[in-house]
Amino acid sequence: MLNRHVRLAKVLGENGWSEEPVLYNAMAKTWALPDASTSELAEKLMLEGQEDTALSTRLKAQPENLNIMVVPSWGCNLRCNHCFVLHQLQVPASKEERSIDPDDVILFLNKYLDTHKVPTASVSLVGGEPMVRHHETERIITLIKSVCSSRGVKTAITMTTNLTTWPDNAHDLAESLAAINVSVDGDEEHHNQQRHLLKNRDGNPYLLTMNNLKLLTSRHAEKVYVQSALSEEFWQDKGRVRAFVVSLLEHGVLADNIFLGVKTPTKYSKEDESYLRYLRDPAIKTRPCCAFRYMEQFTLGPDGIYASYHDTAGSRLGSYDDSMDQLAAAYDTYISDNMPVLLDPICRSCPVLAFCWGGCNAENAYFKNNPSAHCNKPRLIEKVDSAESHGDLRILKTGHMKIMGDPRSAPKLIPT
Image (cartoon, rainbow, N blue to C red; front, side, top):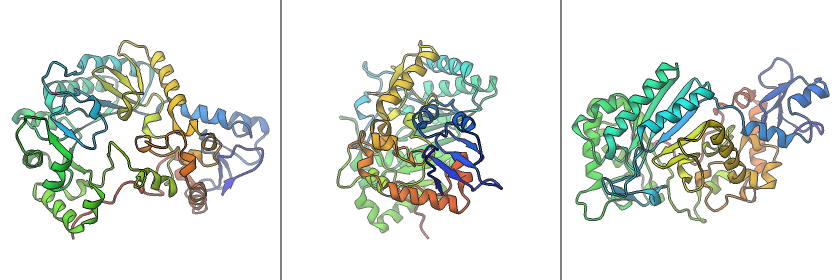
């Protein structure tokens, strides 16, 4: 059960992974025996009144891994209704198009690895559309792998693409990637309602993507994943969904690599908001949203370094010439000034903040400074209590999410 002893911080759990009872501070990720002295408890940030210190310590913990989203270019040949970065997009090969200097990526990576000893670096190539600059994209991949290999850092590099363009010589690029995430938003009618070619450009976005998808899966099927943003109307039509999945299978996509129901709207409806549904029936989340993972999550773009891909307007940390100390200070300020649960006094004092964190910031459009007004705290306490009573505190201790699914993500639907 949640430990509510008056002299202890309100984020403790008991039992679950030890042969004898222990006290576990889920916020500070520290533990102690029940008969620990006051000085020991203070050292572990477990005394009443140490909640803010435990919270600050957790938010500024040293990164366990490095996660980078690299934007080779803000150029994109589509304009999609649900794009998070629609305001950033530019016409490919135009005077306005901004592309990243691959040497800046390596400058950042070397400075980071000089100061943070992480075992792995996960890199996602996003856009814009990475394939409008596929030569630069390929060079970025090669340079990142070289630097990380020389330092003993494991890498996994993926790319997200609309796949409307796929040059014949791009198969070497595919070989160098761990996964290729292709956006296909339903059948032809639904997909083309959401995805539009630039003005004065001929072609059918759906057919362009599907034709290239078949070429790609013919050689790299195990690496190809399809993610689909579907409207509620489309999702409710199970026959239409099933036909769409069958079409993907016929184009060589593996059944286990199809993910439907991705939520990526640019504008949210107050009446139909998945974020509200999440707050009202929250899943256990033991880590903050990726937008607020101190010195662990970065977006590297043509015009600087950001904390969040979904908030390039507000999360700029600095330039490639800045030192790691400067970027760290900017990251600390960004989290303090923008993390919704820090701006909400009720959230800050919540006994289960370390199992919630306010959910995904990308979906927090209308309620960013007031998530507590919409949350179901008793339900989350019930879930944490249930996890502890079933011996699942090992999960809470390690921070691995195996207890609950995420209600915001629709289940995969594979035809029978």
